[in-house]
Length: 117
Image (cartoon, rainbow, N blue to C red; front, side, top):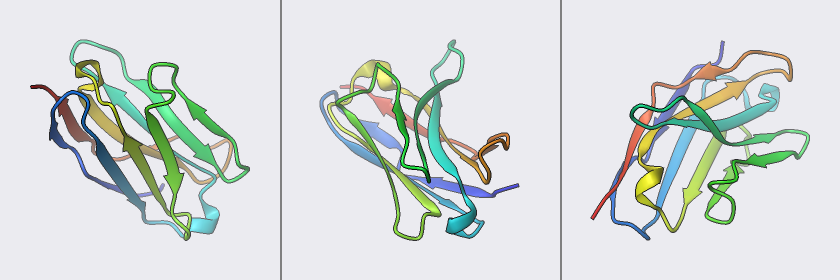
């Protein structure tokens, strides 16, 4: 099980930017995939983006062109740069990680993002 610690949430106006960060407890070379889910009030949890050590990156259609996922050089940190934020991006964002490709996700505790004027 990978322990995850998120930071970077907060309140931002529409059109603004935020950067989420997440650090994993396991050594970076052993973490295959890191990513982000989000859950808005009344909605199911949805995958926002993930990045694998094989170089594969996924984005949900709703965030393509606005969000960018990246991994730190030590590969045990993942970032989510969120630009042109919209009120519908308001949610609790959860960092996830899988140490090996067929492992279930480990989950962070979540960080709240609120987009409102």
